[in-house]
Image 1 (cartoon, rainbow, N blue to C red):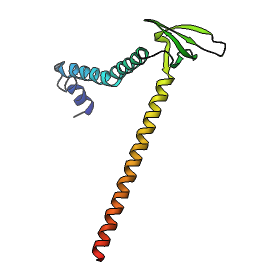
Image 2: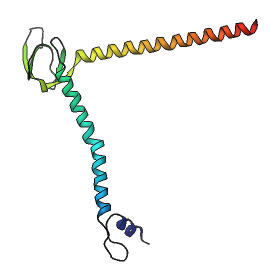
Image 3: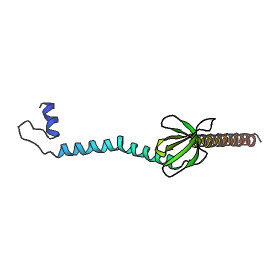
Image 4: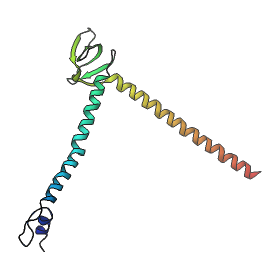
Length: 146
């Protein structure tokens, strides 16, 4: 049997005897393709948008931010739909819409500090466990000598 005809008959084409088969496999394949596209493309994009919105809603006065245009500054005023930042030593004030915020440098620095502190605590905990095992082994050796 010709493999091309077999493949075609499995997915809604004509079979080797000329009869048409059901369109159900083709519909199932299209639904499956849509499900894969949802989990590969649409869902991650929605998660990213939610994180960006959370970032924009959490800005506070005094935060260092970077806009989508690359301008960095310190927030001095926060309104419902806009923010005002100071951008240079001349205290130049600029107003931006909230959607123009790309990163919150202050929050990123805080997160990096918290991660470093957590890593240091884990490293210290590992060292304490190693030291405890060494003491236990040493005491076991001392007990067997006695």
